[in-house]
Length: 113
Length: 117
Image (cartoon, rainbow over all chains, first blue to last red; front, side, top):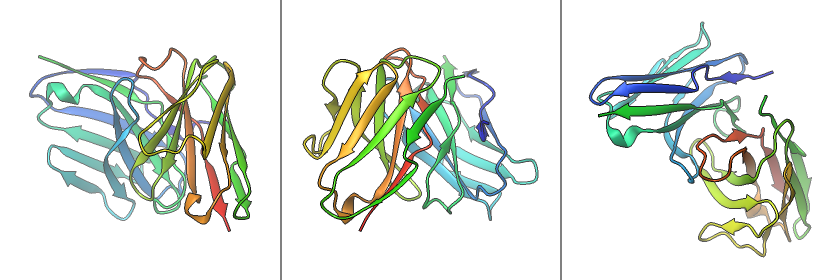
């Protein structure tokens, strides 16, 4: 049973537009959510996180939105840049971030010039 | 599909002992597996890349004699923490890539919590 789902394996967005990556979860005990970015042949790097006590967290061009009732979170990137092309993983934790992470299978974002 | 398991999920050991963690790809063959150490709330540190049938490639700063990696088959990689100390206590995650290290897709295991007393 997949507890963290990223239903779009890939997403293509034009440079300068908004990229929206979605993530759904089923475990209501999850209380901390993270997004990681991964380039080919490299490990994932932490991008942005959000605690379940918030519904929005913003960091520069990146904003994560959390809808607890829908068990849904999304990552918005605006404006999208060529360097944003990568695989994005959504992850969730039920220990306030101190415990282990459950990952989605990733969404490959392609920014087109 | 694309399920990765880890065993054990949690382990507590005494300082000085060795601990082996297994990472298995259950429904696909993984030519490459990756081992990460998780730090609270944020980063995943890539420790090493494990290639089937060859020596692992370790990241800078990771002691290869302390963290032994064996990738004996296309579905199994093991990480052995030798002479574990309390500072090795952490959450260790593996991921597997079905197409080798140039493929973006990785499937993550559920992780192993190691506590060294």
